[in-house]
Length: 450
Image (tube, rainbow, N blue to C red; front, side, top):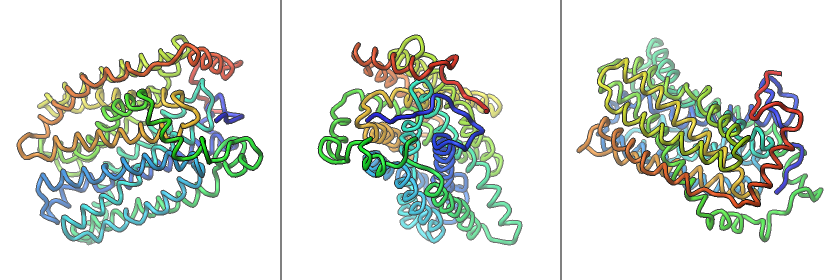
């Protein structure tokens, strides 16, 4: 699938082109989805008391929140290939807002578990975000575009750690009880999701030249049938060993980030004996690194590609993963709060750069099955989060021990990045496409404020 008129520069302050509208709406939509997805996490200390949850039960709800996303991400990438990212994102935002607001009706472990399971579906927003920016940006900046949109979306993990305790505190100041307060607080992200869904439908389009149905009518895009159908697209991606290597890679970076988003606040609350608001603020710093960290991963991916081609992108991915694993092991050994915060920020930097580096490689695996590849790799992140959650649901090990073991796993599995290879023909083809995209631009991965 060749999409024409992709942008070869990211003009951050512009909304005048379909490329930049898609960029800004996609990152903001993912940000809000992340806000809704993990909105309950910084309030778990209150929910734990209200619903009398054990550590094992909390672990089960964490698993539920990311497990369903695996299935939805696999399906939603193929759906993007079929109906386009605009319709797919709009539907996810509107439908996803319902369980976010509805979690307030939970009155037992079982109903709370089902609510978190339903909310987990909105985590598939990531795949649509990466798909939409890939549709809009040329090879010289696609790594930066993907990383920035995803990073600013993941920033929702930091936003929710900071804002949800504040919203909860305001409700308490208004005389609302704790039992009712956490329930009412979840209405906020649900309402914003619904409004964002309407905006996505009104102000974006699937590709630079129009929506998918228009492109197919004009013959600029093949029909979503036969070899271009959903089944064929998924099978083409599933048969490629490189896709599954990236599946594992994303499991040990984004899967780890999801895990930290779920446990950071309660870890600092218990381990360092902090207040809920303070623990939430510190945990929020981990997510706030997405302002620039994931973007840096994409920028470095584009820069490594300038001189090393696709091999350079893979090489950078491996380096970022090794640094992530080392930082996580170090974080797990911190007993002084100030040191723990500092190492956590270093760890956050590398885990998010590894994520950006991963989706600096994804667009080049199989262009005819882009949605399926993005969906499978994206699902890997949630599989990693589910697997990691089992470390933290057991009463036999502490959260600190779980973090140490997780760091060792990252170091071992980082080698999977080296399984991603490209033929000489593809390397040459992409090198030429890169040079054409750069044109008169100076340097790779350029972001502009114009």
